[in-house]
Length: 342
Image 1 (cartoon, helix red, strand yellow):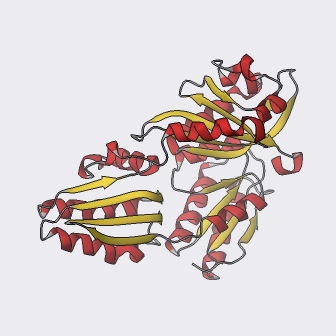
Image 2: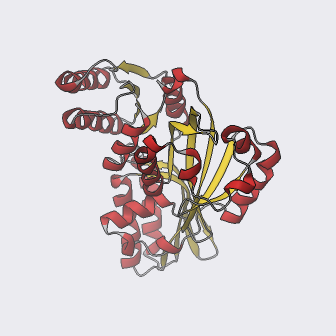
Image 3: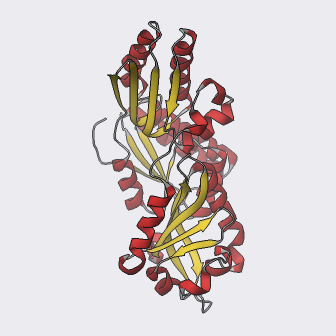
C-alpha cells in the first residue's frame, strides 16, 4: 500500500438523511478517485441514524476491498456504541490529527514466513490479515497444506498478527482444517484476543486446535513490572485495575492528575475515583468496548478528588496472563485540550 496523505471528508455539519446521502456520495467519489486512506469527520455528535451508520460501514468495506483504510473522527460515546455494533476494525479517533496518525501507523502489510524446525513446519503471520492482504499470504498457506500431505506437524504462529477479519479468518481456518484432514498434527500458537473472540463468535474455535490455550504477548507479570518502573518517572497517568474495576496500580502522575494518593485508591473502584455522576453510562460503554475489543482510545471527561472535572485523552488496554486470559485493564491518561475534545 502506498503511503499518501488521507482524503479528509468533513461531514461535521450534516445530519439526518442529508448525512447518509453525503456519505454515499463521498464514498463513490473517493473510490472512483482511487483514494486508499480516508478520514471521515462526523464532529462531536452523540447519535447517528441507522441509514448513516450503514453508509459509514459501506464506506469502510469499500476501502478495505480496495486495500485502503478508513478512520472516523467522532465523540467517544458514539464511537463506543458503533464499535460494539460493528466490530469490523474501523479506526476511531478524537481529532483529525489522531486519525491521520492512526492511518499511517496501520498501513503495514501482512507478513508471512514459512520455515522448518526439525520435522515441524512453522507458519508465522504478522500485521493485519483481511480481504485486501489475503493474497499476500496465499502462497504461504498453500505451502503448509502441501507439507501436511506428508503428515509433517504444522505450527501456525499468530503472536504478531494484530488484526484479522472474517475473510482472513475463513482462509486461515480452511488451511488449518485441510492440514488436519491430511493427518498432520496441527496447532495454532499465540493467537490474540481479537482473533479468538471472532473465532468464538463464528463457532470456529474447535477447528483451530490450541486457539484457547495459546500464549498471548508478554506475561502480565512483565507488564505490571513495567508499570512499577513508571511510578516515579512516568509523564502519563498510568492506572491498572482488575476485571471488577478495582485499582491495583496508580503511579505518581495519576496522583498529580487526579488528586488521589496511591494509598487512598488501591482496592477501590475506579468509577468512584475518576468518573463523574453524569458520565457513568458512557464509562460503562467504554469498559464494555475494552472488554470486547481489547482496547479503547479517545477523550473523556474525568473527575478529580476535589470534584473539579477536566477532559482527558485516555487509552485503555486489556491485560492478559501467560495463557491469554484477561485479568485486568491498563489505562493511560493525560489532559486534553478543549479543541482536541471537539
